[in-house]
Each structure stands twice: as C-alpha cells, then as structure tokens.
Image (tube, rainbow over all chains, first blue to last red; front, top):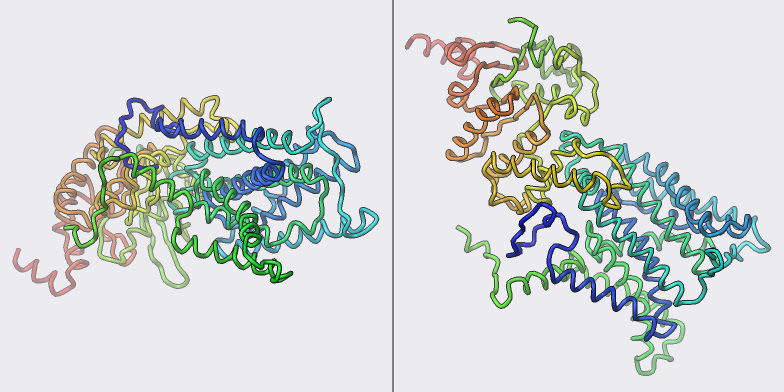
Length: 359
Length: 266
C-alpha cells in the first residue's frame, strides 16, 4: 500500500515485504517479545482475556478475508463458528477423537459448509447476499439446536469437551492455552498477510472493487468468491473448534446473530480490508466490554444501579462504537497510519493541500 | 478480403435487447497487427460490438471467430487466456490499489495456482511475484507513468487513469487489444502520447488493436483501416481516406442535407 515513504527500494523483493520499514520490524519484534514474556507477569484474569482475544483474532481474520478483501457481506459467521465447535465437541466427546483429528475435521466440515453458503454469492450481491447468509445462519443454528436437545440429559446442558492432549502433553490452564493460541493465531495472521500480498488477495480486492473489470483481466470471479467463503468458514471453524476446547463445553446458545454482528463490528472498527485492522478490531471488541465493566465498578455508588447496570454497560459499549466510527470511520488501522506518516517525515511536517489551494 | 490469416472475424453479428437491435448483421475482419478503428456517431453500437467480442454480451445471432475458432459463449474471464485484452471507456480501475497493483492484477493469469503456496509464501509464489513485478515495471516504463507507480489510482488525474486502463489491458499479454475511446477526456499532450503508444503497441507487441474512437482526425492519421457503424449497421469499411470521402459517412455524421452541401462544394 501507498504510504508516501521516503525510503529507497532497491529490489522487487523489498517492495513485496510484509514489513517494509525497519521501524515496523522493530515494533513487531517488541510486540512478540512482550507477548512471550507477558504470562510471567500477568494475572490469570488478564491471560484469560487475552486467550479470548486470540480466538477472536482467528475468527475476525477469517471474516476479513471474505468481507474486508472480497467484499461479500456475511451474517453467517457465528454459524461457521458453531459448526467448528460442534464438530469438535461431537468428535471429542462421543468418538473420543484426539485433537489432531477433531480440529482438522472441524475445519474440513467448515470448508464444506462455507462452500455451500457461498453458492448464493454467485447470484446475489450486497444486502441480498447478507440476507441469504442470515437464512443459512438460522438453518444451521436450528439443526444444531435440535441435535443438542436430543444429545444429553437436558436441552440446555450442551456438550462437554475434554482437554486436548498432544501425546502426553495436555493443554490445560491459562498459560498453556496462552502459548498455544498465540502460536496458532500468529500463524493465521501470517497466512492472511501472505494471501493479501499475493495474487489471491489482489484478485479478491479486484472483485470487491469492480467485478466486471476483474473478470475482464482473467479472474474467474465465481471461483474466487467461493474460495473466499471457504477460507473464511475454515478459519471460523478453527476458531470455533479451539473455542470449544478452551471453554470445555459447547452450547448452541452462545452462537447468536449478535455474535456474527460483533465479528462484523471487529473488522469495521479495525479497518476493513486490512489484516492488521482485523487484529486490532478483535482486540478492541473483545476487551471493550470488560473495560466498560471495570469502569462501571469504579463508579461511586455503582451498587445502586443493581441489575440495570448490565443494560447500561451494553448501551455504553454501543455508544463507544458509534462514537469511534463517527470520529475514525476508517478504523483503528487509520490511527496507526497517521502516526506512522507523522514520524516518517519527522521533524518535517507535511500538510495536505486544501481544496481551495489546488490550482 | 481473404478469411485466411484474419485474427478476428465478425460474422453477421446481431445483438438485440428486447425488440431493439443494437447491432444488425455486422461483419468485418481484423488482420494481424492491424490498427482497426471502429467509428460512428453516438449510439451506433461501437461499445456494444466491443462488449460482444470481449464476452460481456452474447450476440443474438452470428458468430465471432478468434483465429478461426468461435468464442461465443465463453465466460468473460476465459477471454484473457484466449488472448483478448480490454480497456474500458471509463478505465474501470481498482481505485484503492496502486498503479503497480492494478497492473499486477492484469497479470493475474500468469501466476501459478495454489492457496497453500500463496498463503505460506513458498514454492513458485515468490518467484512469480518477482517476475511479474519486473514485467509490470516494463509496462510502466512503456507508458511513462513511473512517477505514479505507487499512487492509488483513484487519486490520479483522469487522463492518467485512462492510460493505466490501457496499460492494464496490455499487461494481460493480448494478441487482440480492444480499446474503448481511449482518447476521450484526454488533453492534447496526452492524446499525442497515446497516439505514439498505439503505434508502438502495434509494432513492438505485434498486437491487433480494435480502437473505438470519435476523433476523426486521429483516426485518419493513425488507423490502418476504418469500420463505420451507424444505427447498428456497418455502412463503410475501408482505408481512412476513402472512408472520410464516403457520402454515407458524411450523411451519418452530418445528416442528409449537409451531406449534399459537402458534395456540392467538392
């Protein structure tokens, strides 16, 4: 992407790096070191929150491939997560499948469902496509609800999932999960960044911006739309399956339409069509409710609010998102870009020409 | 004219929208490395003809042959592999991407397939990326748009966007290049540059060009041959000077009485 950097590029390889500038490499290395040593200092609650964030990152990256890059609005993301969670839970609980079988199987089923849900995208666009994915969401949730009702002793008990084990090592406890999820979500981020800088990412963006022009330069639009649905659903199923192991229990009630909208909010707040934006959005949307809860606890006389407090907290979350989008419609990634641009030229300042000054 | 050797043969193509015929039984040919101008007043069916050739419309009847093989009914994206590149009247670029990225999208069919190789950035992915970038730099040099290389095309002046549109079509490596009014909206200097590029494309890339144009002066100066459409019918097909003197063409552009007046003055 264009950033107006004053740096010189001397080879094609340099123009195609994920992190073209030295300061970006330093920044990412610093974040990596901080992420690795953090469990030594953080308390269990913080690590739990970060684990939730990692799961959200995997899911939001999946949605960003489909909605951010390829421009296909999907309200079916929660149902893809549910598919992953249920396939994992059923295989692990009923058939005693180990994690290295259950998770790939969940991803495969997710890919297949994504393919089917993607078929209407060959005919519909925009809001019409969103409605067909909504219909798919309810169909999938209905099937899973029926399954859950007939599965256990009670309809709402859900399916318990044993802790995952790789050979003798059992992943249990916050810190083990932290490192496992850090590794997996980093891999997903890298995969998404590689796709976005290669021909597949460019083809998706071309389809999003002008589909007829995309076809006229030889991009098989139908195939790439389906590929986006399959990739997105696979990553969602991966996030769902990991979430099932992490929570230890799967209930269909967790996968509401609201969850699908929260995932959409993540990529919008982070900045559509940017992998880093999807990561920032996932962090923001996961931590914001907890932050607001803390803020309410800190209020004097908070106890007087009683149970209304929960409603107020949700309202405050909504207001925070609206305010954020009003003042920063291009998302969190735009804040980063502005800061980066400022320091690239520091100590000189660059001022955009105002329309009146253009001749 | 012989059918042998023709790159493109339009064989009695008719295109109807409901009861209205946009193109009525038009036939012509394009020879290898020929700069063939397609002219006519507004609504004559020029763009409709390009849309038929590039697969956006399917003709109601008739046939379109590329190197002797029918291309009717091929999906739009197959046309690039068959060797047809298309530049649109309004450029139709990908506005958020840079000039380089737009041209790399033009090279789409040259990349080897593979989700895993691309996602893991292994195998031929890196080599393809470097090779295509090098190729795209060659095209950027050819069209002299180096200074816009890393600018998002949405922010560029209209004239530059149209050049990038032609560059993207050329990046697909076509043997038949379809240009829809590439000069419209360009200032004089840009037109002169484009005229130079057209002649160079024909010589250096050995591409056949079908060029829809309104500027008759430019057409007479550059085109090898001219096909004139009016109300969906081909009225003349010939050398630029002959076409310019044709009574039917003058009538189509200026009307019946005016055509008589021009003839009188001669």
